[in-house]
Length: 257
Image 1 (spheres, rainbow, N blue to C red):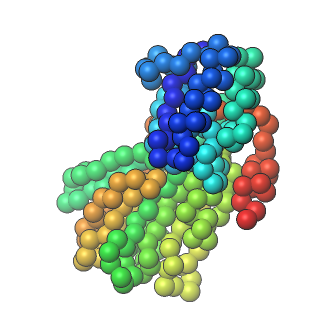
Image 2: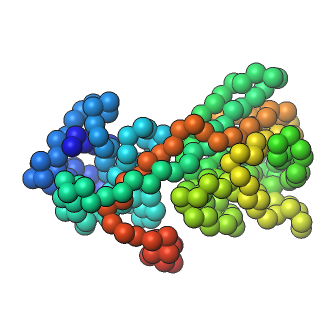
């Protein structure tokens, strides 16, 4: 099996962990390649953010957690010895849904990208609430004055969306949560959960520019009247697991803090 290493060089003691990882792979006849195209597996050494950097690849990703939460990772840093199980085929691959964003301005798409966790429409440097409308399959569903809006996948439901009061969704399910951030409304402050087949459109009604961010990356300026269209992506992210770890185990061990 050929392995490509994706290393987060900003992590503390990363050189030591990388050396240990390479030693374990060598001891188990797992070949490290510098070519993503030639690899059978990508190993991410860092945390959830490191995995998000390579989400959407057609190669399976096995995450090793050096961070705090590591919700999407398969192993903790003290479990790297379990990589020996790869040689015996003791693993499974879970395919996670992704979503796609098209930012449309004056009828023209000016930005498009895919995301695994969430798309966030936020205030940027504006100190006041921003105004925007939400449409589902072309029909207006809500109008908000809020700090922003999060559109998250099931995988991303335990990230920013959960912190904003959104629902926790089973990560391998296909659902989309639409969660306002501090909405100034008594009746529209709850999340909406819809099918990924639903076309979700956010329309900015704010005269000042606001920002669109995908998976904590980018910072795209959104102007008044812009349409942020979210649909199901053709891409998926394949996460490799080395051990039986139920959804409830993850919730209890990772999120009971």
